[in-house]
Length: 242
Image (tube, rainbow, N blue to C red; front, side, top):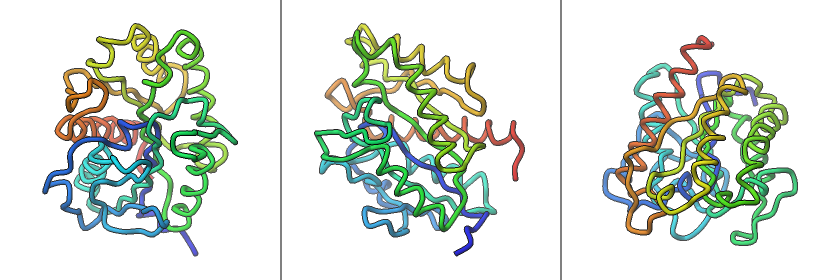
C-alpha cells in the first residue's frame, strides 16, 4: 500500500491534557469531512471527541479542534489524527520499553506501533506534545529538557520522519500556581525550540481548568487546539510546503 501524500498525519502524545478531560458537548461530536482518527482498533474513522481511550474519563482535548483548523487551512489535504497520549504518564515512560502502571501500557512503544499503522496510509507531518505535570518535582524537572530532546530525536529517527514538526505547550497557569516546579518544566519546553530544529512551544496562558486545578475545561482545550494549529502552520510555512 502506497501512502497518500495528501493524507497528513499528526500524532497526539503526552499525558491527560493531551488525551483530554473536558466535558464532551454537542459540538465535539460533529466531525469534519476531511479529518479522520485512528481509533482504538487502529481503523480510520471520522474524528469526534473523545479521540483518546487511555482512561474511561477521556473527554475533550486539543486534538479535534487542531485537526479541524488544519483542514480549514489546507483544503487540498486530509488530516489524520493518531491519538497516543496516556493520562498521568511521566516522560521517563516515553522511551523504548517504558511502562506506565496506571494504564498497563507502554506509551512510547504503543505510539510507534500506532504510527506505523497510520504511515501505511499517509505521511507523518508532526507531533503535538502536552506533558509535564507528572515531572514537576525536584527529581525529574532538572532532567526534563534532555529527556525531551531525546524523545524528539528518537521519534523522528525511528519513524523515519526527520522533518516532522514538533509542537509542545506549556502547563496551565492554574497548575503553575500550585506547583513550585512547573516553572522549570515550562522553561524546558520553551527552550526546546532554541535547541532542536522545526520545533515550537505555545503558551497555555489564560486558559482555565474544569474544577480540579489540573485539567483544561473543554473550551480551553479547544483554544489550545487552535494555538497548536497556528504554531504548526507557522512551522510548515517557514519550512515550505511539500
